[in-house]
Image (cartoon, rainbow, N blue to C red):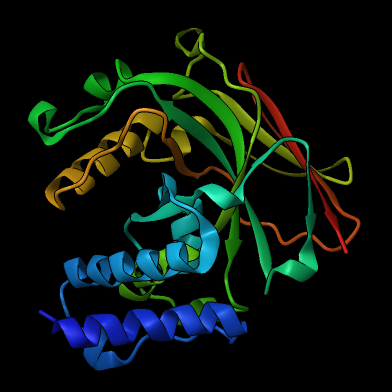
Length: 266
């Protein structure tokens, strides 16, 4: 287990890396030898720094690397969670200045709006039990800052410690009648400048978006936290990350849930 001093110093170094737009590099090997729980402790400290810097309060959570496509892209074989802050939640259609980001990536996801708290007393949570706590499902983009990373150098510990690169989200319209949608098999598609950019299905994220939701709820409960009513959860990308250039228009559609759109500007 890392000392509180190491936790704090590592969080501050990660915060400075983001602030100065330094290129991504893995944390020191001695730090990465620690249990993954310590990476989440570093993340907690980073969250406090981000809130103090004006990014807002935690408005939700994301789950990274839930699909085989994303795990193969990054070389990391397990999911990872990170926080979403209120000041970087955007409605669709969004206009995003790429100059405001170090290296903007876009991921393609089912977002879930939580309708009731998911405390530890209700767990362990399952795909079936979390369904009763879902108020709405939405098509969504996750915005990621990968720091121009060499993906061959990625590791789960560093990704978790650095809040899994979340730079915000773009949300489509909420669908409260989500029970009529086959969330295991619904087709997902993206377009860049009206040209096909990729295709998947909603079940590519751990088999079902609610499997990802249950995984996150249990992770937070083990850490003394919980998903709260009104939070948004990003359940993982079914299509590999795209990196829009200025002028690019990106759309993402999920059968039965509608679509979300953004334009990259400068």
